[in-house]
Image (cartoon, rainbow, N blue to C red; front, side, top):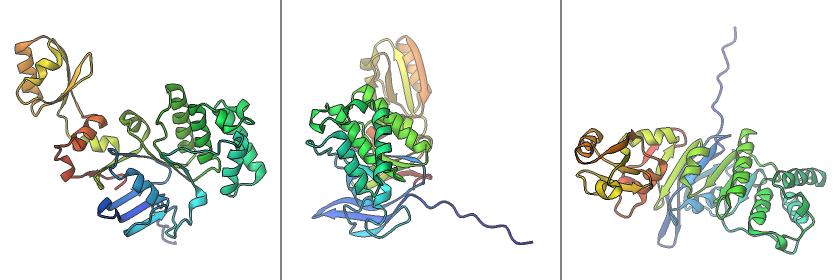
Length: 319
């Protein structure tokens, strides 16, 4: 009887190993290792200037690392996998004098698509985005929201294995944001690996299988939302009480009071002691001990006097 075949774990869609990238005296990314599983949605978060876009452009081989290795879709050679990647840059730009159909056909041709296949995909995506009647209009006639949807179609027209989106929701109204969000999730369900950067913590929480945070060029978070939250414990309290934020800020041990309007969110090392203190002083209508939100974790790390980033919270999944 022959021995059972050993199955190898699937190769990650993206793997960075000890990548460093500098610009003059500035280190944009420092000794970054990252593994993005195939078929997942991977969120990149971090303050402006933290290294997100540099990391994305390194994955795309727009930038070459000073040291370290970059592997994309199993390829290490420069640009070898580019026809299998779709990219939506943060700086949007389309050929404004071309018609919508022609500009999309042009991007499809750049990826090596046959004309008939491209025409079918263009028709499908314009219908999905509610833009069919704009196919023969020039790009310059589009509203900003319409143009952003066309740019998104250009990134996905060739059915990429890996889709990289730099701030895909920036500037979108709620209706168009929902259209793009649904399209991203549909692509992910069909097997596309999606990497996107965002400043919207709620969007990252709800959409991403894994979350990676970079701060001052260093990886400080990497894992599932549940694992990241678990690593920060349960010191977050949501409370609704008479006196609100003004009362809470003056209580001993209270940190980072965040006024949410009808309730407040804060940190306290001993929630039970806080509850006793509140009950002795005021009327407490709601008191909940919970794990910190991604928004709260982001603020803890990125605020100017933060010490959190000295101990990276990398937890499984994508590290």
